[in-house]
Image 1 (cartoon, rainbow, N blue to C red):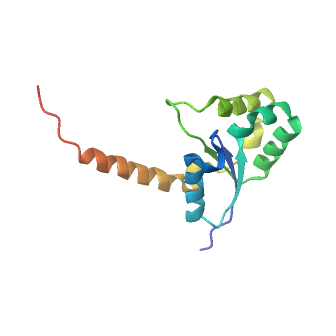
Image 2 (tube, helix red, strand yellow):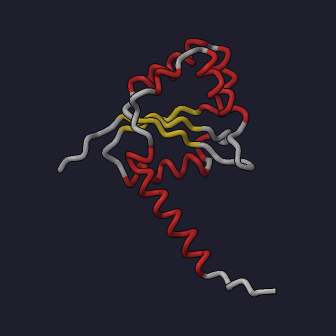
Image 3 (cartoon, helix red, strand yellow):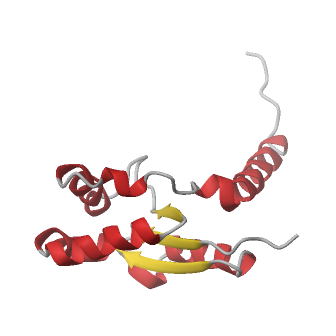
Length: 136
């Protein structure tokens, strides 16, 4: 059975850009699923330009509308996304373009389930190696 090639937009939320661990994870996923087309958009690095230049913002929204799926890639700092990425999310609602995201494959449908399974296996494997707690 042939897998349908998807157009995937990667919204990179790392302020470190192409060398970030976040982008390296997505590139790793790309090596596992090379049949898809990936477009990387450096949201966190370029947020000042995205916020001030409505043409640039609209180009991003058009890419999202044209995509089959979206990967929201971002590092987690103290259980939060960084402020630049958060600002992009705010702009989506301020400018009323949230409908651009409707009907897109969420990452877990495409390949996130595989990632979650591997992470869970790693966590469970590490937990099983911990010494048992003793009663006080």
